[in-house]
Every structure is written in C-alpha cells, then in structure tokens.
Image 1 (cartoon, rainbow, N blue to C red):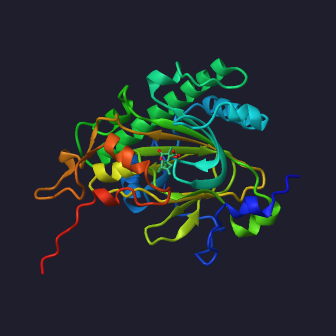
Image 2: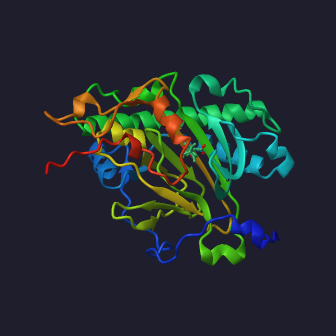
Image 3: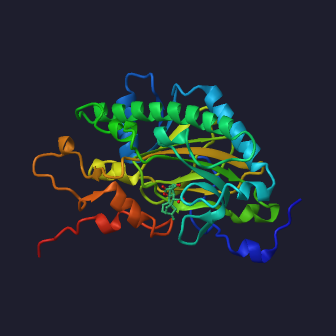
Length: 334
Ligand code: GA4
C-alpha cells in the first residue's frame, strides 16, 4: 500500500464539503441518440441549459476505444522513471500532478498530445515500448472521435438553423485545427482522503470549441449547473460526454455556455479518461457567427483570434474565467 506523507497531501486541494452533496448521481443529464431525428433539437437545448450532454449511438468503434485505453493503462503502469522520459508536457508529453504552467496541481498523471491529423503520425515524442503502435492507436481514436464531433457540430448548425451546415465543423476538420488529446489517469484515492474529496482536476471550463470525454467505468466527473450547484455525472463507459467550450460560447454569442467541470479523485480502482479537445486553427477569428445574429444584436465580446485567446489562457490559473477580459462592458444608461 502507498502511504503518503502529510506534507505531500497538503499540496492538494479538497472540495469544500459545505457545498451541495456531491456523491449522489445526477439523473438529469441530457442523453442524445445520434440516430434520433430529434437529435439536433435535444443537443441545442442541452447546450443552452447545461453546456453538457451524453451521446449514444455515436459510431466510434468500440475497438478504437479499447485499444487506446489499453495503451493508456500500459503506459501509466510503467515505472515512474520511464514515464518521466515522455515529459514534461511542454506543450505535449507526460505530466504528473502539475497542471498547466501556473502552479495548479491535481491528483492526476496524464499525457497531453497534439491531435492535429497531420501531426499525429510524425510526432517527435517517443514512448517507452512500441511507440509506432501507440501513435497508430492514437491516430485511429482521434480520427473516429473527430468524425463524431463534426457530426455533433453539424447537428448544432441544423438545430440553430444556420448555414452552411459545416460553419462550425470546418473549424476542427481543418488540417491546421489546433486540437489536442488528453489521456488522464487518476490513481486510486488514498483511503484516508476518501472522505475529504481530494481534487483530481480542479474546476475549469475548456477553452476550445468542443470537448469529447470518454472514461472507464469510474466516478469522479462533476459539472456545475447554471445555478452553481455541483452534480456528479453517472459513469458510462460505452457513451461519450460532450462539453461546450469557451470558443463555442463566443461563436454563439452566449446562447450556449461553456460548462464548468472538475474531477474528484474518489475512485477506489482509479479512473482513466481520454478527452479530445476540438480547437480551431490558430489564425481563426473567434467571434459570434454572423449567420446567427439577430437584427441589431451586438457581439458580447471584443474581437480576438484563437491564438490570442490561447496566449492569454496560458497565463491564467485553471479555475479563472478566461473569457472575462474579452467580455464587452455593457453601458447601463443612467
Ligand atoms: C483546460 C482544458 C485542457 O485540459 C487543456 C488545459 C491546459 C493544460 O493543461 O495545459 C490549461 C487549461 C486547459 C486552461 C488554462 C491553462 C491551460 C492548464 C492551464 C492552467 C489542455 C487546455 O487546452 O486548457
């Protein structure tokens, strides 16, 4: 058994248990069957109300998921010194406990990988063991998940009645798309910390357009509802969960809201999750889609490119509101 010394554990954060109960599973998460003719409307409503939903009949081959999970389990099971050879995540590679460049920590180790279709196969990162097999598996997984993400973004365009149908999906289909894949391993929570709700990954919103989460059958993921209540997402290893990112919030001029989420390291067996973050090309202007704007409607945000947003995001702490500095201050007439 691993016994952690108190000074090590003091570096981690715990959930304030005075906030609403976090252990009961929330049953109100919208579920979308991608084959349902009503899918587009259910997705739009889910993006407006929660910024979050679950997807079934997603078309991602179960083998592609199983192979990447197996590679992740193999990698995270290696001795620490071997995993460290693939780090630090600068910007891509292996990271352990430290998240991002500004002092955030979590009970997590991870691989952060570039998910741009052109770059995956010729990545310069080498992994212990069969590196070629690893990249092949990543390539297959990302290809299938990107395809599903494009389908979801096209359903959103249809549901919002905007044209062309690929007005959103083109952002992540573009060969210069700045997308990434994060594979997280939350080691089992030390028994003494189980009651205290050790934080695996602190609360935050994702900067990109859309994030697609798949995890093994383990608990831990929580989302904040619009009123700020935190609720636990019931695990489902055969489905995917979709988060609206900050960029999609801006592209829809606030009609959709990016969802705050976090992971509590409460799993006894350990949690493995893989998240595809669909991001636009660096030079892309992130602004409300003109085809969506009503007559006289003004943008809630100042103009910026994805590259400018990303640059400022990397100066923030995980829990910060990264869109704040781009929000236009509304003049209230006296
Ligand atoms: C949150 C979403 C993704 O995991 C991520 C994270 C990134 C990182 O781990 O390097 C960031 C975080 C995320 C936003 C603010 C900055 C950058 C850590 C951090 C403190 C890969 C991403 O794109 O943004």
